[in-house]
Each structure stands twice: as C-alpha cells, then as structure tokens.
Image (cartoon, rainbow, N blue to C red; front, side, top):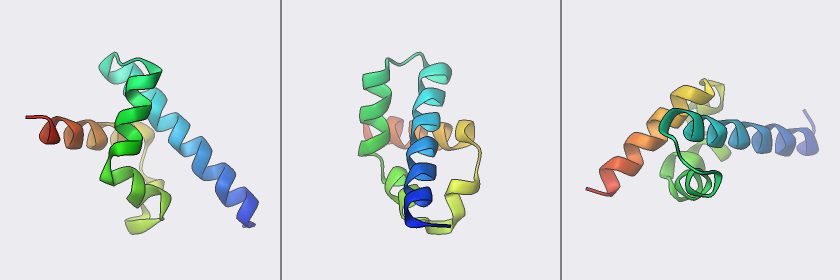
Length: 73
C-alpha cells in the first residue's frame, strides 16, 4: 500500500466514523468532527495502533462517544 493510499484510507475512515457519530447521536457534522478529533481514540486510529482501523465505523463511533461522555461529566 502506498503512502498516498494509506492517507486516503485514513481520511475515508475518519469521515465514516464522523458520519456514524452524527447518525447514532444526532450530532451536527461540526460537533461530531470536534468530538472525533479531540478524542484519544482518533489518534490511536490514525497511528494504526491496536488495529483499531479494522473495527467497524459504528463501533469506533460508540467508543469515541463513550470517551467524550466520560470526559464531560
């Protein structure tokens, strides 16, 4: 896989997770994008840690949402 294709895959994965956040939790695109990029999980996904990129978008959205909820108690 070329570096360009890796970047395209990561961008697509991020966009799909953000869309899942919108769909699952009724967030605006901006809200979901902010939550995604402020999460520790997004950094792990983008760095290829623990093969998180292999998990479903909905699963990762739920993990990120739980992380967000925990940090805003």
